[in-house]
Image 1: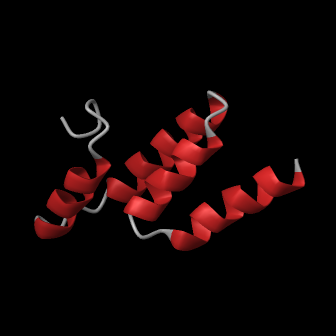
Image 2: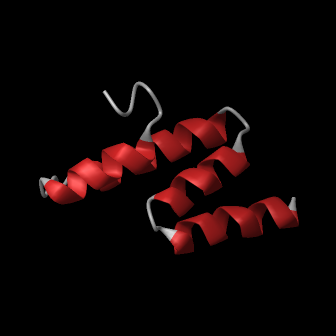
Image 3: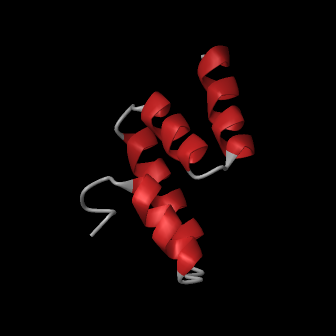
Length: 66
């Protein structure tokens, strides 16, 4: 439900609370979709909200180069 509504903050919090392990793959898939839609800053924000700062920085670095 959180994926459909793009409520990643809540989704990540629930996944951590209930020890769901596949959240990283869903997060990566959503970030890839955003990048494919030419929305790198949305993907960066997604990674930031999920505390994946290294992935956010990698995308930001690529945007800076382009």
